[in-house]
Image: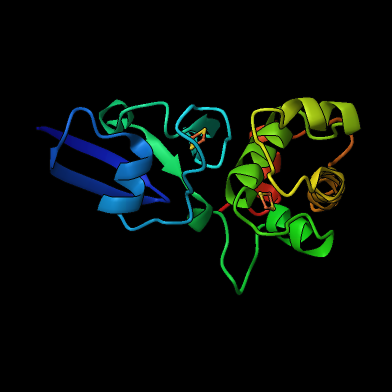
Amino acid sequence: MGRIELEVNGTRHELEGVEPRLLLVHFLRERLALTGTHIGCDTSSCGACTVLLDGKAVKSCTMFALQADGRAVTTIEGIGSSAELHPMQEAFWAQHGLQCGYCTTGMILSAIDLLRRNPDPDEVEIRTGLEGNLCRCTGYENIVKAVRAAAAAMAAAQPVREAGEPPKSPGELLEVGGSR
Ligand code: FES
Ligand code: FES
């Protein structure tokens, strides 16, 4: 049994008795009751379990919880609220980017990471960027539309720069776009 200290959705957690073989996805769902992170396969192929680890999308079924020691994890519960959605959540809602919703939490977190790396992706770049996330409802057309809409909304939310001021970094852009 091990001890883990990590930040999840901005809250510090220190837990004892973590089994070395416990996967991060089970740790989030069973120890922290963050059930927005889904399990859709046992082959590391569906992406339903995607979370952000230090801001980068990872499949939480592909790593042990103890490997997240000292790191910052963001799950779908940490990016917005029902009162104030993240722009990516808002776009998925407005563009009908979900059907059953099973893939949606992982899809949204992967899309947020995609925009962190490429704030203005075209359709091919979105499809390539999200190829690790499968939608069993095959709702890909509207998912692409949602990511395009979120990119536009996040770009529009940037403050006007003074002449000569360098562009915002992708990380700053995400914060401006409403990452919480
Ligand atoms: S549950 Fe992690 S990739 Fe399918
Ligand atoms: S919306 Fe049903 S799996 Fe994607």
